[in-house]
Image 1: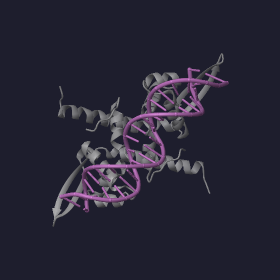
Image 2: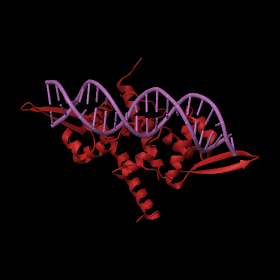
Image 3: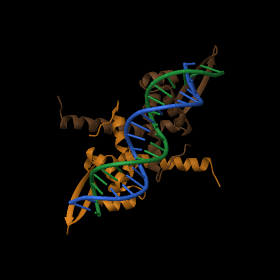
Image 4: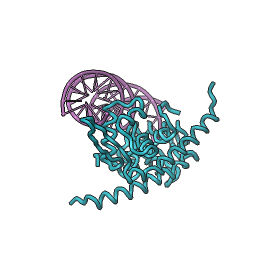
Length: 114
Length: 114
DNA sequence: CGGTATCCGGGAGGATACTG
DNA sequence: CAGTATCCTCCCGGATACCG
């Protein structure tokens, strides 16, 4: 487990999501299943090589995802998947999605621009 | 609404929590009801005056909390409460709390120290 | 292909002091 | 009591280059 400070369990859970691409990584791994590093990088257009690596390492340290490495013809292929722990976060992610969708829709109606 | 970037509704929701004390503020306001600035500051021992003000302003800008100001004998009293919008976030907060509690308990069993 | 190392800029959060 | 202003520090994320 990475070092972090939290006074309460909810902050611990929140910290798992807190990284620029973490929640999106979790979301994609859940819906698309196993993904390679390069596939993730394509899905998260804009994520730097280095930063993506960091986020993945942190998620792995937290037990949210797993990493599997293969070598084919001296070519490295790395596959990432959700762990059961990671998958168990999905209800929360989906709840955030639903809540956000409804809220953003309400904001659209409230302040129409253009 | 503050400026922020998100590709998806779930990131918007996440952004509402993302601030050092925001989720705790929401939690306290839900369970304790209306709280004064100074009460919040005591509950969040460690939060600077300035930072607490900032977090509260952002939560207010996002429609999560309301602010009510009173003057008694030239003495200012400011009360904060959750809005209905803010209260509707509670299922997510509670879910994070439950998930985190279970996970932390499991980690304790897995790696007993001392 | 995927990971690491180095350098850098920006923004969040802390310390402090002043205001009404 | 609550908010604002200034200054400062630290860390996250981006850019780039090199390694296996």
